[in-house]
Amino acid sequence: MNLNPIYAKMGTTIFEHMSALCRDGSRINLGQGFPDDSGPPVLIEAAARALRERSNQYPPSAGVPELRDTVADWYGATQGLALTRDNVIVTSGATEAITAAILAVIAPGDEVLLFAPAYDAYAPLVRRAGGVPVFVALQPPQWHYERPEIEAKITPRTRAIILNDPLNPTGTVASDAELAMLANLCVTHDLFAICDEVWEAVRFDGQPHRSLLSYPCMAERAVKIGSAGKIFGVTGWKIGWLCAAPDVARVLARAHQFITFTTPPALQYAVAEGLAMPELIAERRDSWAATRAVLNRALSEQGFAVLPNAATWFSCIDLPASGINLSDADFAERAVVDARVASIPVSALCEDNPVTTVLRLCHCKPEAMLVEAVKRLARFRDSLA
Ligand code: GLN
Image (cartoon, rainbow, N blue to C red; front, side, top):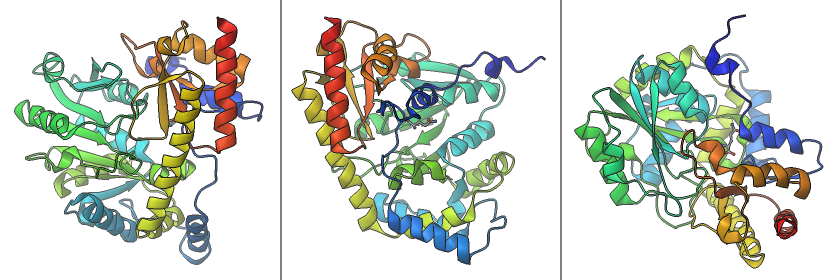
């Protein structure tokens, strides 16, 4: 069989690889990012009610109006964006939104700037759309965006950038100056920006999130992607959305209509209820601020060097500065077997010239689990000496 080599040569994702090793319950999973609880009861009740009382037939392809309206309102209230339902298309998770955006924006031969480390889906999707991923490597500990390095990679074929801010896996947030610079680059070089902002509500720096979409002249050349999975900690729901100028959103909706067409209505209604509960969103964020503090403290107490982070469910450690001379991939593969703790080596999220000294750990877990995991990792590190 002549299967598409993009997929035929591909392994399973690092997230699935690590989670698969943990599914029998024998290991602590600080690899793939998801909370240990099963989600806010009020949201689950809303979904159950919608399943019982509302239609379970195809909702509109663009999403139920209740959710499109609430997404627009929520961005108005929290980020000062003036959106209406015409700006919003509901998708089956942010990964589907990213897929739709890439398929709708990228034509064969187009180059797409990606920053490394990057979410592992971007480059294969760009390739499947016929595009060419071009990587700009970010460097620890700050993972800053540097204009000369980015501009050096721009050619007449460059069509788009994909920006993930706040950034997974590093947990860092671009500064206002960096975002303004990136917006200016997009305008100067006529680039479209695919903005993966799924971590926008999981910020611990007290700053309001600002989208690249909101910078001057970006409204017509950007799509902003969000995720209920991250806002509420219900990663299995796969409710995401994309927001763009109505003319752009209409085209993105054409890509979405031939990927999943639509998204389970009960979950959409429940998310619409949740977005109208700012106290619930704040409570989730505060609980993750607390788990982050627990993990970072436990790591520091055991002599691990925690890199600066301000967002996401992840903290990263610098391995050499933590007394570990193995590469991140070797450490992660050995730790999941010997210490029975799963983690994510950041090099798995860099296709070329990977940073091999940084390990990602997920913090949205119970305190006792985090403390035990760090103890095990410390014991394992000490056994290597
Ligand atoms: N976003 C999740 C993470 O970074 C992974 C999602 C996935 O497994 N595809 O852990």
